Length: 169
Image (cartoon, rainbow, N blue to C red; front, side, top):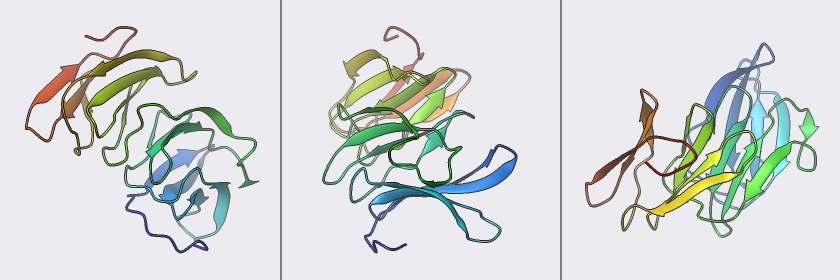
């Protein structure tokens, strides 16, 4: 990638409008490639320099949480071509973003825990925050999801099991 800046993200491969895309964040950008040919389909500049958390999707949008040196959460419409920086960001926030833990999508909700232990739940399509809650001291593990629940494992070894929705349960 042209910016040659280190990042630590595992790419995701998804079918977008009937064609596979390999989507990854890092090196001062978010980009999509055709995994069969390596051809870049689209690129979004920024939103920051380095990324650790992997992207997730809900079948319509892809989501990222990043941060170094700036912190961001973005929902991106992956159905673009070329540079989509100004056209395909559906929603964004810079509050309570995660740098290390990867987020999760569960049903209609996007969930994330900041490294400092503040969890947030957003309506995935709109970005409207449903709730924000301190759930521990420090988090590094990526979120898991199963049977309609999100699982948050703290660095202290405590697992919080949360039912995504309009209120913290």
